[in-house]
Structures are given as C-alpha cells and as structure tokens.
Image: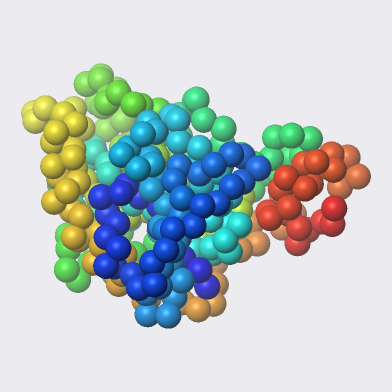
Length: 282
C-alpha cells in the first residue's frame, strides 16, 4: 500500500515523516504541480503533492489535475487523502470545523475532467464520488479530537473569485453544505485511475451569505490555524487505513471502457498504459 496526500504546502511538515526525499516525476500529461515529497510513516510509504505548487503558483483552474493524479498512480499510490479549504453554506458547520464530504456537485467548466479523450471512451461510476471506506477512516481519525462532520455535499466552483451573495444564497437553497474550488476533477480522475480518494475539508469561513466578509486574509488565517489539526488527522488516518481494500474503487474501470480495443490508437494505449494495462495489452 502506498498513500498519497494532496494539499497546500502549509499542511506539510517534513518532520511528519521519516526518510524524506524529493522525487521529480514526469507524465504524458506534463509535469505535476510540484515534485513529489516521499517519506515513511510507521512502515507505510507516503507521497505528498502540493496541489498549487510551491509558493501557491497555480490557481484552481490552472492546476494540472491529470498530471497530479497520473504521477501518484505511476508511483503505485492506491489511496489519496486530499486536503481542501472550504467555505460553509450552513450555520452549524462552523469555521475551523472539519468535514468529510460524501457527495459533490460540479460547477467547474474550464478543466479537463477525464483521462479518456483521445480515441478512447470510458464511463466510470461517480454516484458516490468519494471512497466510503477511506472517508470513514478520515472521520474516525478526526472525530475524537476535533469537531467533525461525517457527511456533506461539496459544491465545487470554478473560481478563482469567491461567490457572489446571490450565488451563495442559491447554493444554500439547493441544500449544498460546503463550497470549494479543488475537489473536481480531482475526485473524477482518481476514480478513473482506480484509486481510493477522500477529502479532509477544513472550514475557513461562512462563504458570503453570512454577515462576516470573506477575504483571502480570513481564509489563510483560519487555514493556518487548522494546520496542526490537519497534520494530526492525516497521520492518524494513515495508521487506520486497512491493508486490504473492500470498496469498489480498485476496479472502477472494469466494464467502463466503451471503445473497442482495436479502435483505440496505439499512442493512446501507450499514453494511458499505467491506467489500462490490466484491461488490454499494447
């Protein structure tokens, strides 16, 4: 088992792991946001990837999500713990709370949401966008020490601007719980790559429907206040991940590839080899 952590550089502390080293990785989709940081925790290999790159260089719309997920898959990662700063759309989900979302709603439009778009079509199931087994692990790792919520619908907006008040009120009326900018297409690509994926969402603000004004200063301040909690939950979760997967994430592509193998371009087969080799030969 190899575990991946995707998050901002603020949640990573080299002392979290032993035998730490930097590993540059290239992919057919370009370079990931940053080189991978590889370390070990209690005998488990862990790969950390800064989603926005060192110094926060990439906006949510500019992140190379395909390269990020492919790089982790290439290294043999089976489980991804993704950290996401979010706004709350409900009164009882308060700033500094932790949410482990179980559903998502996609409001992005500038991002490529699939690996399968060059002469090959695959329809993977996304009814439950986050791995229920890994999500339970995260919740169990958080609930005893922090105010945590086991469910919630993550509204993923395009950004990089925050919501208007009208948008925020509509999202509340539609029953969404939290709002962020990075869960998608990250979760969709992880499912196509047959990796377990769950989100540790930390609430930084009440979005703009509440009386408090949402500014980047507020978001960054509360994100920083949550850093220690996030680190503790991640380390606790790594220890709790079962050695054998009982979910269906590891077989998500089984029966999902609609294109006849003979019709798939050879270059595409080679490009997606890390993902599809178990289903067809080049």
